[in-house]
Length: 212
Image 1 (cartoon, one colour):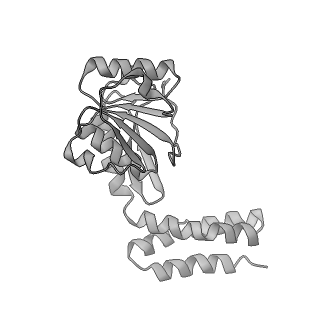
Image 2 (tube, rainbow, N blue to C red):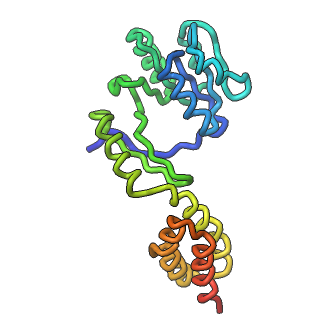
Image 3 (cartoon, helix red, strand yellow):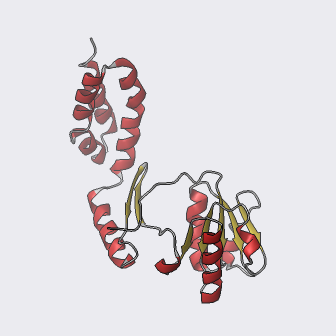
């Protein structure tokens, strides 16, 4: 049985602590900011690329070595240093304060791990091997990327635009028929062929056919 429970977390305005100022920390901070987190970086120095992300609004830099007090109000913790002693201390402190912690490339010190993620607009597919082989997780993600192309972003945006209308205008049994029709493959195929207007027309036709 896997020890990890898969979950998607809303990071919007959540305070996240990142310990470390290298390129691993840079990539981690980039992703966190893209998902709306408030990032606090603790490190005596930063690589130039990471320094450019500091804006004192969503991304802050505390220029010093890590200490236990840095956990403070952080709701999520990442340790991205190459110093074993520091990573071990961050892991210990986060767990003592009941904060979820991830130590990059060291699953034994983690209370959560970060999967390999494929994104196509609102579609997110997370792949994890439980920390046993990140390379295999990335390979599987690459295979998924060939199955689900860029059309998925437009496809899901179109379907989302009809959710409220279908819920408001169709009874439950007709909603099922509508979504079966809208997602039978034809709409996605048209979008993939860059025939968005025709795709929208198919969805609208499905909807109108079910109105009393």
